[in-house]
Length: 267
Image (cartoon, rainbow, N blue to C red):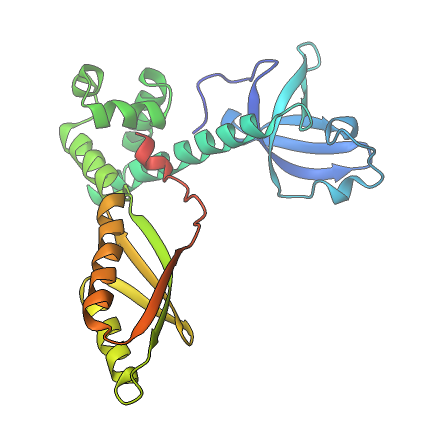
């Protein structure tokens, strides 16, 4: 189900699904507003000159737009892509995707409790939309065990199942550190065996060892705390110091891309 407002307001950021691309623009529907029709004029697709609109939008595409014009007499609505900033687009997509995921989670909770009567299911969904304004606010109240959530008309067994699924679907943040290890042994007789023993003991301490190319290896440590992950690497260094009788080593930390936070963890 969509938002309580049946129609968006001028200036609103909306999710639009492109239904048909024409010469002078694209016809779209707004899934948040019961699939009402809107029009995306070609001049509002991009700031630059557009020779072929098909190079920018295509049928079935999901785009974030801003409502720029509403003709109440004709019932028409125009939207714009170029008037949406990257930040606004990202925030809107996150909000929309979170609402969809939480709606699916609520449906899953009803299915697990064998609530299959459509009238009963619609009653609970309509209650959430009316009293909480959407699944995101409902789940936010659920995670906080607010008074509104405790007093809500949703049956206790359904509330309990929602909370159980919400917690089980949250991904625990894991910190990862990666170092490139260069490891050389000068022991001509037992050098290979020495290196194998060192790497084996490092792995035994919870660090993954990946072979790159002689004499380089990748050390990967993961933990629920960044300091713990780093300490695993420090322990590996101690292993090398104690086990490497003749040789040399060096470590270089790899720069990792910032991982996206699971949107469920924002609740």
